[in-house]
Image (cartoon, rainbow, N blue to C red; front, side, top):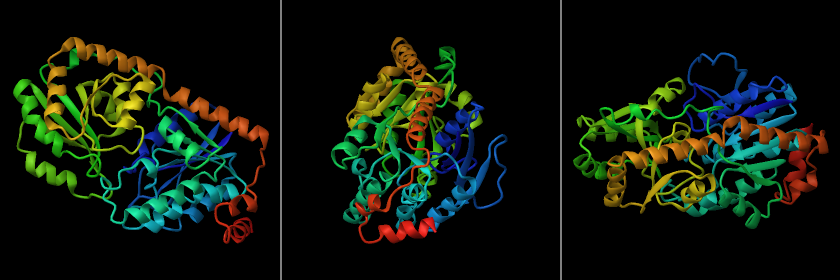
Amino acid sequence: MKICFVSAFPPSERMLNEYGYHVVRTLQDDPAHTVTVIADEQPGPVQELPGFNVIRAWRFNDYTNPWRILKVVRELKPDVVWFNLLFATFGNQENPAAAFTGLLTPALVRAAGFQSHVVVHHLMDHVSLDDAGVRNPRLYKMAGWTATKALLMSNSVTVLLPAYHRTLVEKYKAKNARFSAHGIFSALPAPPNMKLRGNPEHRILAIGHWGTYKRLELLMEAFPAISARVPNAKLVIAGCDHPITPGYMQSVAEKYGDNPQIEFAGYVAEADLPQFFGRMSLLLMPYSSSTGSSGVAHQAAEYGLPIVCADIPDFREMAEDEDLAVDFYPVNSASEFADRVASLLASPARLAEMSQRNYQAALNMTMPNVVRNYLRMFEEELAKKRTARAKPRELVDYFPEQAVSMVKKIRS
């Protein structure tokens, strides 16, 4: 099978680049498939990762991305075009037109006669627009509804939480939506080495793209109470700014960087993750809301880390569905957060039990298993109608006035 994979891709640091990397790496392990990554352009020359076929064809905050991507797809003529997307993959609040038009790309690719599949990591229906810093929530809700309908015009759509699948089926009447586990990034994770934890420090980790629904203020408020009860606790903050909150990490580091018990690790390169995670005792998720299945939680499971997380319905359902060991605390409660963390760090037996449980959960959702399920679906779809083309009347159901002329232009 010949696959084009559309995603942010390393050395890009944009969101989902790590997920894209691991999907493509797994695809390339099977000689029956060839994959070309259609990736995001970078500000300057980049050294591509060895062994990957990457075409940097689209640009963040550029409204012409659908045509840029479609041009490459037409040249390569793949069997499947696989999109790895967030609603903000192609643009941010500074250029909502680019974000919106980018999400039309899967429908355009299908209209041009190619099989298109979308993995969408969140839905606007489940995003807290207040936490996201949206200035015009009503407009964003309308745009989110339209963009979701447009994504569903691809051949198939996968979401990573059961609640999202219910939303697509019940609210959007989707017949081509499916649910899949997020998966871990490894083919065979190594069991956790408990001797590295709490020896001599308990390193507790908070990692992500910070500044919107992932913020550090609650954690900084809770940490003094944690360190008072667990003197050898050290807080490690890793990751980078969310694209819409530039400078956030620097402002936090300037305020708390003098504390010897707090380390700002910055962005952690892919090759350094096993050693980095292996020394941690606990993962912290001090979020105010969610935007989908947590990649960070699945990384923690891969390395057998216990998790302390805000009690957010999406995350509780994820933990129950995947049998993850997570201790929840009430959202925005610094005292409860501190108590959960300190209590866990004071209980080696509980830490070991949660570590083993998350490691076992990881074994059940390795990336090869996840990718194998996608490939099976693609093969079934291609077997039914290998040369399927979207008909103009299908698009009319969504965009009655412009659909026919749009398709004619695409196909000409």
